[in-house]
Length: 242
Image (cartoon, rainbow, N blue to C red; front, top):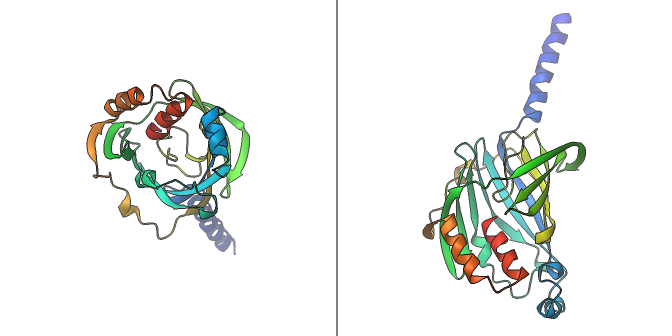
């Protein structure tokens, strides 16, 4: 009887470890944007408010396997879609290699598709381990980061998923990022579910479509093109290179 109890406890511990430490899977993120805020408070913004739903929602999938991930568009909420959204940005793909700290992204910019290679962005994170919230069934801890020199990112991560990644190019925390809010982009990314069985990890490959460029080369071009666009131009730069 004692031996049976020991074996049962051992099996239970194995099952607990399997649940706690996940290195392969697929996360669905609900991406919600406040369109009225995104277009600003000027004349252009006021004109657009009558033509747009206040919020629009899209869904993206992050497939991950140990040190690599692929993040891409999956579907949009038809009830809240922007009327003139032609869906070009929905072809964007983010491939991240966390071991080599590099990324290769497919981005649609100014009517062209680019294949951008670069190092993963450097993010200065400050952890707030005592602040927690639950996302997709995981209790997550808060972290605050800075990107593009001055843009604040508020994230929640779980160390139960061991991959140090997240949506788009966000990374660098002690586990997977399950929720993100970037106030200056008026957008939030929230994990809604995790799939661990039957995940097609074969799709985790660097995209090959598009004109090959280094990320910083295209960044200079975009900054020059949007220099006179005001806050909307700044938003465009962040959106392209996040």
